[in-house]
Length: 220
Image (cartoon, rainbow, N blue to C red; front, side):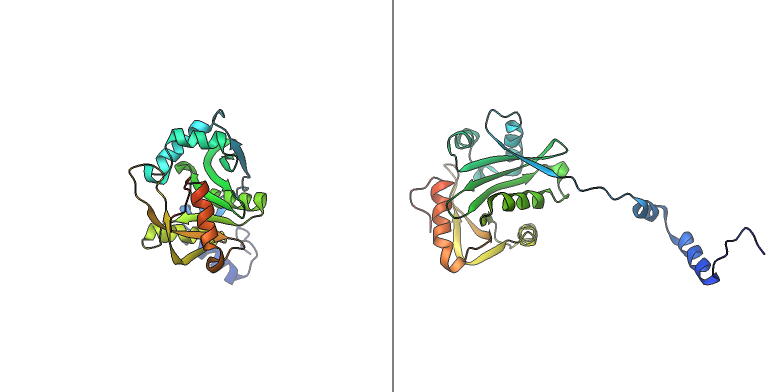
């Protein structure tokens, strides 16, 4: 008997030998990599005196062009003086990782801006933030997206669909201009929860336009 060879069925030994000869080092590293525990997200409502508010401002500038946000003076005023508006900072392992700005309106929460810092993207943090908002508010959520005509826009819509949102497609929706010198932008609404496009579109549009955009009469 060969004592250098374990007592195993020959077929099994041949299989293990084949695997050992054909499994590359990179594959071994991947297979043997420990499974990391999912880190819980912490979300904190900020005011303009909060230490991380400047990080929120920086991420807003880096992520959204001027036509998609207020100027910083208007944003600071809104954060301090409009109780319906919540500026939320997102944290993982006590690190600032993103922002979630939303409006708590009569029938739903309007998600105005959601952004994750570039170095933290691709880790499911945007989905965690939306799940947190669903649990906290227990209300329908509404947000604006660009029409899914290009690859980037389609991927964004699919991200929200994976998080339970439905794209409203039947009617035209215009985003009012945030600042002077810009035109309204044709967008689409996506909705999570008990809102119906055929019944609720006019009311949803009215509440968003007269609160978040400060219009006296909503755009059609």
